[in-house]
Image 1 (cartoon, rainbow over the protein chains, first blue to last red):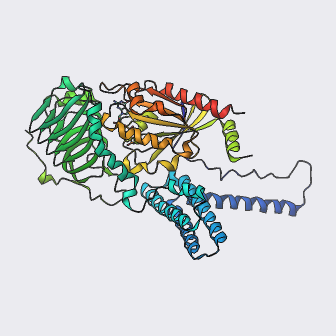
Image 2 (tube, rainbow over the protein chains, first blue to last red):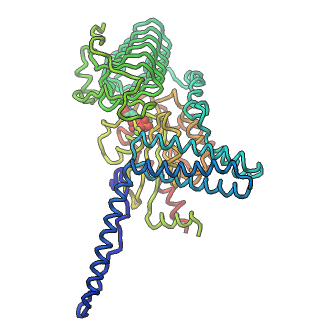
Length: 353
Length: 184
Ligand SMILES: Nc1nc2c(ncn2[C@@H]2O[C@H](COP(=O)(O)OP(=O)(O)OP(=O)(O)O)[C@@H](O)[C@H]2O)c(=O)[nH]1
Ligand SMILES: [Mg+2]
């Protein structure tokens, strides 16, 4: 397999037909004809340049935002105009136009995705979603019910607006049903600890070496994983201390409160977690989603054999991005997410056992 | 000539395919994509947006879209549905706790009109992990046998070792090619 291209859009804006020069051998061409041809070529060149610089500008998100908002505003205006329209045929026509232009706007957004910063993209997507929703509402309002083709399309459009109808919160409701499933499909051979209270729980290097470890439903426990697991899942945890040796791939944390976590890993993925301290060595990136009051500091916990386990894990000891945390609920670039912070040095834990 | 016919013709000429890779966060999508090229997989971060790669394989040009699977990004998945020839659904076979979540997300994708014509490849990834479920267990958990609307296939693989990645893609290409490029 050969890689051809990597996150690049090719544009054929520049592909102009080569300007052919009619100066065929042996033909005597009048002076002014040559002059005119030169002018024409220069003009072509100028136009090419103009096009080129325009396409460069187009790829800038500033241009995107301007074009996007003005088109959106225009569509909104059309949509508002629909309401006052008493002539049903006219209203229907306007709706059709709004539909087409909204679809084109979506396409414009899709085509621009490659060069847009995430927050511009999210914002544009959100406002487009709003527009699609008002369009759907307007359809319901204006078009007679027998146009079920429209109605079915309208119901396909996810209704945003109130957060309760947002796909994100719909998924949250599945979480509660999950516990029953947990028990059904978790076979006993899974390496880890589940359903303990107020215990000290330790696993040796031999037990967890290159294993996928699962820690669930623990309260007031101290967990020590003294080796290098392949991956760790941590779920439904309250007031625990969970320390682990180097995890060669990701650590997945979900529903954890009032706890202290410490480990080296390649990725840390934290969900639904509150009031938790993480002493971390992460070689790629830590992320949080639906979290509050998560605080980070660099890893300092150690145990005999840590050096050896680092080697086993393959993690780069020199690369630690513990303070570069991506918050998936806070995509504004340049402003600090309110959901996580760095533990001030004076407050960091120094005693570990 | 309808738009669809034109599209088919154009693709026929270009022998180009668009593959969309989706799945829950942490499934291993980006790792699979990078592994195809023998790129370093140790520096991969959770995907905040999406990655696109264009690869050439077996005389086809493959445009592969890898979109982030975090909950907050899933509502954007539908922006990438258009003209998808193949859907690659990646599953973390060791993530037993989210299999139900995984099943629901997949089944709602399969209802999408704009993915109607796509072939489905399910990668039961992370088979290298000792606690991973077999591809048959995944097949059952995701109720794949109930799928009547799409051509589908499940393949156990590991993005870390590279095992079976090519086998999966080859199956997908063959299936798409049979549908799209031999139509006329
Ligand atoms: N053991 C093992 N780990 C894997 C495998 N594939 C991926 N991983 C690890 O799983 C974690 C998640 O992989 P990613 O490729 O970032 O997952 P993703 O599906 O792209 O996740 P999002 O971008 O959040 O949607 C990383 O730590 C990978 O190293 C595999 O086959 N085996
Ligand atoms: Mg990814």
